[in-house]
Image (cartoon, helix red, strand yellow):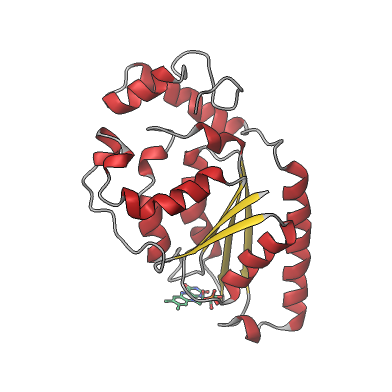
Length: 234
Ligand SMILES: Cc1cc2nc3c(=O)[nH]c(=O)nc-3n(C[C@H](O)[C@H](O)[C@H](O)COP(=O)(O)O)c2cc1C
């Protein structure tokens, strides 16, 4: 199994260990990125990705190793500690660059057969909103199956976490890893994703953005073809 982990922080603290240990437990080919070390640039708001194509984004080349790893992965892991109730700025800055591949624009067919996990840790509170910051992108990219792995650790570092808490973390990692391994290659998008895609297919029939309309038409998605069906070109 190919696994891409995007860590929303450079350091190897609690969140890193949980995300990394999950990937190790699953096994396979793991590719890891650390933000901002591996991508430190903010979206400039030019909207070129939407209107002219993502390859015209001024940061396209810089982001391409991360994009390739995400596209090739069977499993995407997005991980971020809770920073003031949200994902880190570095994680958000990266996700902003993928607005063009939301279902409202040009989702990639490969997303509809992937699994993904959002990992977070908080000293006390803010896990739900932090996970949502990452999960929203995964949903709107069309990722077929998502899991949440969040822990309130009552600590500020991995070494400070109490042994009993670590046992709980290890147990949840093992059980999630088994589930993900079992489902690899077999997942299909659920009702919510298919329903949203259906709405978008109606919108694209009379779409306002030429680049999106062309893309949907070429893939047959404005008709009856769907990205989770086998005949897609992408
Ligand atoms: C800038 C900053 C903001 C934080 N904000 C929160 C917060 O809103 N809620 C919370 O419970 N913990 C907060 N924390 C604590 C971390 O989320 C917590 O210690 C987390 O487990 C750290 O993970 P790490 O070891 O991977 O860095 C914050 C820490 C930092 C550095």
